[in-house]
Image (cartoon, rainbow, N blue to C red; front, side, top):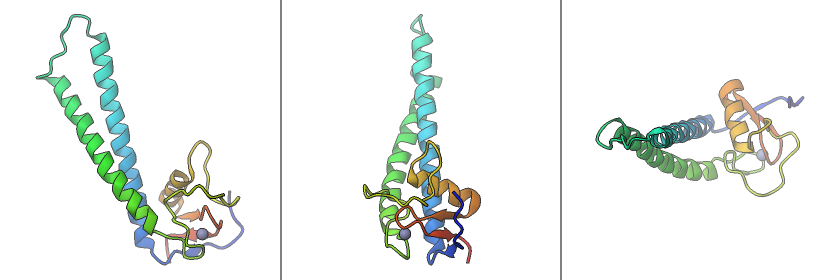
Length: 142
Ligand SMILES: [Zn+2]
């Protein structure tokens, strides 16, 4: 939804950039881990002759899955703490942390996505977002 209000510049644009990067890296880890898990499952289901070889390629898919899982856990923890400390300069609501309180009707919300993902993707593609708690539009640039 496009707000008629002029977007304010956020006082801490660096924190917004870090929050967007953390969320996108988390998503890449999640997609990589799920893809590796999918390959492992499909290969073990289509392996009717017991040819699954844990010393070869299957092992590397397993390592890829474990690496992506570990990376996701570390990145999600960092994203959680960073998200709790990146606050809206008007209402003091956390920009990247969804609280169970009611959301503003002007909040950035894309169909099929949550409030955090919508804010992250909106910042990534347009450089602006509307606070999910007070609805105020913010922009990344000064
Ligand atoms: Zn706000």
